[in-house]
Structure formats: C-alpha cells, structure tokens
Length: 211
Image (cartoon, rainbow, N blue to C red; front, side, top):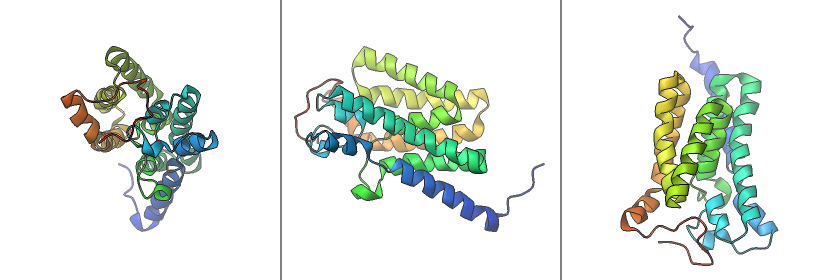
C-alpha cells in the first residue's frame, strides 16, 4: 500500500506544476502568428477564438497549420518537462494547467481558444495511442461532415472511455475533466449544430464573429 501523501509538502509542488502548465498553455499562438503575418484580428471573425480552425477562416492555411502545431506542442511540452522534473503525477497536473491556460489565458482577459489542439498535445505526451485514436476519429468525422466542432466533440467523447478500458485510469480522469471543459467551451457550437447553422471547415471567414 502506497504511503499517504503529505499534503503540506506536496501541495506547493502540485501548484507549481499547475502554474507552469498554465503559463505555457496560455501563450496565444493563433493571435501571435496572425499578427506577425499582418492579418486581421482573428478575434473579430468566425468563432472569435484564437484556435487553428478560426485561423483557417482567414484563408491562410500555413498560419492555421502553424497555430495547430504550436497549440499541440505547448500541451505536450508542459507534460514532458514536468515529467522529467517531478514525475507522472505532476506531469498530469501540468497537462491540466496547459489546457486551462489555453481556454482562459490571463493575457487575453481569460478569453482563449476551445482547447482541441492543446487537448491533443496533452494526450500525445501522456498516452500517445489515445492521441492517435483521437486524431483518427477527428479526421473521420471531419471528412464525413466538414464540421470541426462535431469532430472534436465526438473524438473527445470517446477518448476517456478508451483510456479507462486500457487501464490508464489516472490519465482517463484528467481527460474526462478536459472533455467536460471542452464540451462547455463548445456549447455555442452545439447549439449551431442542432440548428444547422454551424460553419464548416474551409468556410471563408472575413465574416464577423458568430453569435
């Protein structure tokens, strides 16, 4: 039986791990790359968020790809760096911090992205097989429907169950929590999907922010 955790000692380390992940996750790469490229403020178009899907609505596929890559890597980096320093438990906490940081970055008055890429990045560092499954499900649903939001909702719904079946229970608990947050962040998309007004992948986006 493992020794009980001495929270008076452990808690500061967990908080540091959470804060470290949050700082990495809160870097708004979508906003940074589009501003460096001289495009319009992505917060004023499409969904209004700073993720790769909204960057794609500028018509700049290269910028969208760069945003996707950086948003994935910040989640991966938070987990791997903390794993190397303090181990698995702190890495999981750092992953949560990175995800929350992307959703609610302090630099943007806590208005960030919807978390799909960073969710994938955290998965990639923790259980790469789950990340692969998530990506394949996302690609399949997106190819069939052309709805990025629906693809993310379906993939995130399935992933915690896969982790639980595979025996990765601690990671599964984290991913379940991230899934709940991801669905909350997509509540507007869910409404638009039910109404048939959700924007599809590749839709031109000089359009104003969606309601």
